[in-house]
Image 1 (cartoon, rainbow, N blue to C red):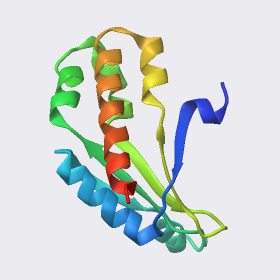
Image 2: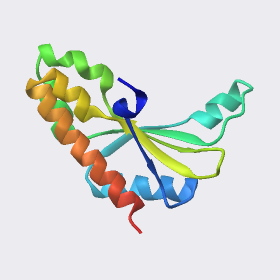
Image 3: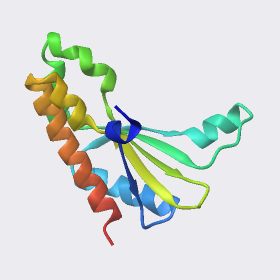
Image 4: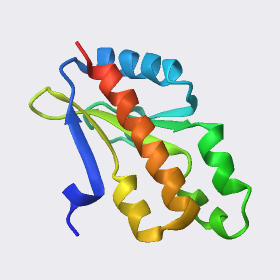
Length: 134
């Protein structure tokens, strides 16, 4: 399996900060929660390394996550929780949004995990569509 099968990448029509602002608003509008945002550019700077802007959003929706966390055997996938969306700038100054292709991963797992991950993937795609809509 190659990287393009494991991850989705979408170019934003907006600059880095506007994409961040629009994504934050979209997450809220769609009823998701955002427990954390990691500024990896700042983190790397703290270690003496310079990288282009990149922020990773941790997002969750209790209606999805509780369906997995309430079950003993399904809790194993909690390492994938919460969902993550990354916004970053490339050297060409264009801004991109990436996320795990959870739908593909879910299909190979099956059962309630597949259902929940597919539902969450659908929601995340809607969040991104809303954020980058002109």
